[in-house]
Image 1 (cartoon, helix red, strand yellow):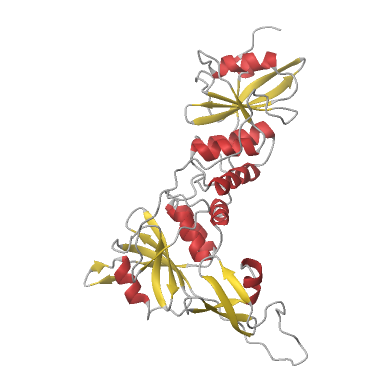
Image 2 (cartoon, one colour):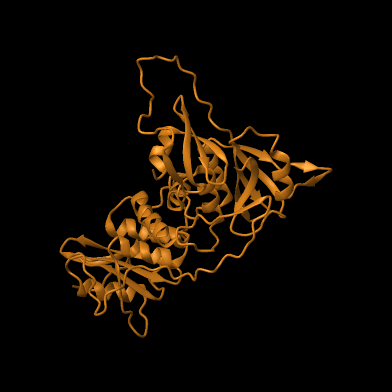
Amino acid sequence: MGTPTEKQYFRKENFHPLKPPALDSVGSLLHSVSAAKGILWADAYGYLIEAAGALGLMPQTMQTMREALHLCGFFPVSGARPRKTVRETIDLYSEQFTDGEAVILKTGSMFVPLVRVTSGRTSRYVLMYPSDKTEHLVSEVWIAWRDGQDHRKKPRKSAENAVAVRENRTQENESLVVYNENPNGNLIGDCAVRAVAGVLEIPWGEAVRRLAAAQDYTETIINTTDNIDALLKKEGFEPFDAIRRNGRILTGRQFCDLIHDMFQAGTRIFGYVGNSHVVAILVFDGDYKIVDTWDSTDRLITRYWAKYPERPRRREKLPQKPEPCTALSVGMQLRHSMFGCGTVTEIRDGTATVRFANGAEKQFAADWILANCKL
């Protein structure tokens, strides 16, 4: 068969939509899944988003990335000891596998794909990656077998949340509502996802998806400032600089006290707190409050985005035309993901008024209630 040439070990390929010269850890995973499975980058990202939503962990954590590999059909195999290089692994699997198995290797914090190619009468695996990593040591081997089964002697258990859920003892105050949108109750560095879920009134997993899609799935770290701003702009929020009084930037507590008369009822606010934290600022019982898992009200609101409530369009009243939403009725009970149980007290022009258990009244589009609340 002859000695393989250098080109038979490595082919320069980059599946990232923007073709950056180097990939980070998340980018290496998405590239590897795209190359090994022959799917689009956005579809590979979909597995990562699904894994993050199931675990309640950020997409860039190694546990989430490994779960994404499981979701798209890969299973780990025992690594060789001593560890082999990528080049040696290519030689091994080119001889061992002949049934079209897809192979992804982990080297350091990066993932790289081995793709079987045929040239004349020769068929072998090659490394397809933006840079040559054939001399790097392999720490993990992931294989998608043709039969779709896990070939290990002890198949994996179903994915579990490995993050220890700590009791949150933060006390609420006049400017703070303690609430954790994370589906598994994890207290992790997911403030961007929690804040997006809060201001858009969507589940945590959907917030991950929208952040990933904010720049057409080109940003591999979804909680960067640029990516968050891109999503808020897409969702119709307007940016504002920090509010100052006597030359000083307001704290969250001062901010909530001041903006009550600045914005119309129902305005949703996404606030940047200090240099590395973000929060949703929403109305509860007529007052603006920060929604967070810890008391960040004494930190500075360095800038913020606001979205004003949409005003319902006036329509001519036609007696013969029924209400646009007949499935809702006054007196109907519902459960809102954030505000809890409530009762519909009025329906007018497609907008429903709901009185919640704490006495607060809020207005929602009737169609939105039907799609998002438990009736």
